[in-house]
Image (cartoon, rainbow, N blue to C red; front, side, top):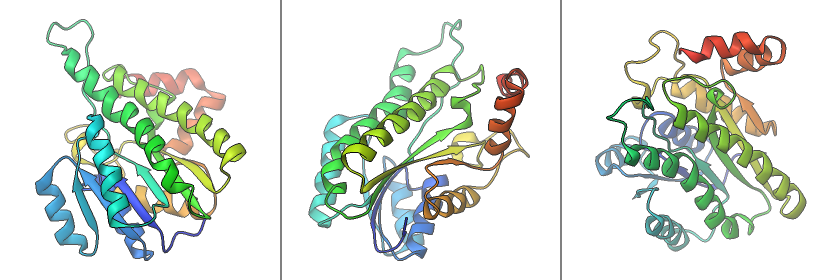
Length: 247
């Protein structure tokens, strides 16, 4: 896929992976729009990257998803790449009395429901172009989960299956829309602060690998150590699960 002269929407684009994706798309002469629920980070992103559009949006609220699409429609007559990057993670011990149902709802709403809904809402805009893409960010934990975050891992498994099934639909009904999935290892972002020190890769490396793979039309993009994980799952699946179980 040619990755220049597009209008790109990136959710969770004000820090971490989203910020680096915005930077890489901008380098390739694209019009970048980033959304986040943190207005301070959005302002800083605008200051750092300059010529981009920003909008505050809580993806867990349906009305704000509609407002986001209305904003894009008002700002530009096209949207050709949607990057569903936003995500949250809570450690969840299901036997602990302090586990909050609100956290479960929020994790599913942001990590999966919003991704599915925003993909649906943006499809009419994406269909107008000769070449468009949806890029969903998932995790190697979709394949070998860790015990400390069962809901997060389940949402990433759901993103993987949704991406695959949606790709089938687009191939049959809208072949101008490619569906990519970036399957990530542990990345050095605000969400992973204090976890896995020394094992993380940089958000910049993630962004660079994803865009490089998109340019080669690689639809399932195994980033960093996920390549090794998928190899282990093929030949030593029990060992892969054992390693990730306590990560």
